[in-house]
Length: 297
Image (cartoon, rainbow, N blue to C red; front, side, top):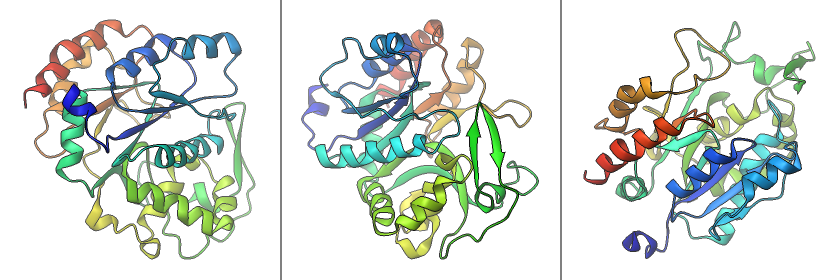
């Protein structure tokens, strides 16, 4: 691991979590020696917060806590805070956005090797609207109407509004790996255009629409067709046989599928989600088989 530690531009990890302290600590260990910028939901009670943050290594930096509950804009605010802090405090080549329900399918050496092979490339499962799986309006309703989450319900004002120019409405997965340039570009666009931040604040699931839209709006300069990879996503996520609000919890029965994803020849799956607190057996199998296997590639 010393050769990895000697690299000056190691990827940084922005980690968004709110529960599962045992799994979170497993995840932190698996990501050594990468610097981690950890956000814990302000809605998490103090006893659970203490368990989540107990005995974390010095490379884990706790971010100021926001009430980043389900469907809330503060989830993407925490992501932006993580990017800003990681870019300020490290020379990271890439910033990985992961959640506390994720786990790597590759060892850190392999992750660093994969990103170093194409240092100007970002990885995010994003696409322009319409997205077939996103309901009757194919995702446009997420931006056209002012809405917010309340007690895990969606409340919307049924009066359509204009989508600001020059936005190209897009959507995708929350998890992603951005180059330093792309992470900084997102921050700069929002710093220079506070009206866009106000607009996205009242969109539905802004963590799935705001950054994808900014990256695919050509006028902002992300050059996604040249510098971004949208498919396959470097996360293994199983949404089940029918469209669902949340991915399936993974178990030992998924190990073959995880192995196949981790060994894809084009863009291997570097991470997977989602893992339960009691997923010890699956995590042990991943450590013993997949993460060991990817070490020798």
